[in-house]
Length: 219
Image 1 (spheres, rainbow, N blue to C red):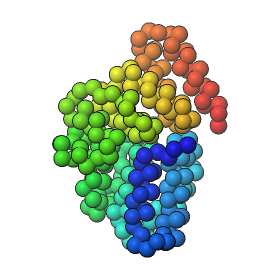
Image 2: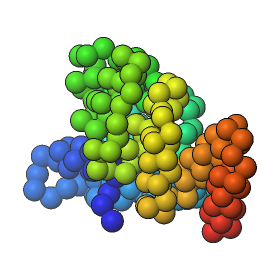
Image 3: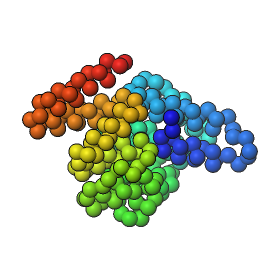
């Protein structure tokens, strides 16, 4: 399975830290730890996610480079956002002053802030359409986003901004379902069930509740 874009970006960042042909041990260990943390987060295994992230965080902290820690914190917050968790990214904010402009722009994007064009251009390409839509209060199509996690992050941000249409919400649920990502799937199925109930569509609501029960039983 292809790795989420956020993890791919983080892996490139780690690889770029080495000045020699052989990466140091901390890089070789930190990357799989952060990858495992994101995977566990999307799978809904909070305990494993915390354990792996702490391991990766400790390895990165050995470098004494706050900017690297700030990037790792953003990866965790992005994974949580995919499941409609909109809590502040406190881990990043601690190191905001040491982070590069691109990381600060991405953190503001994850926080749901309306960005200016200069900030939008600093974002990962996959997030620019959603950021532009939020800034202009207009609709955005996510069909062209190939990376599943990026699609879920963009959908979550549009949802929080009140710009997610039914097709976007359904796409988010289908994306999580296709990947077998338990935590975001439950979150988006909950949204679908609630929308059906509010629309008075008891049959559709019951269908989503059955799906939620099935996913919940998969522990």
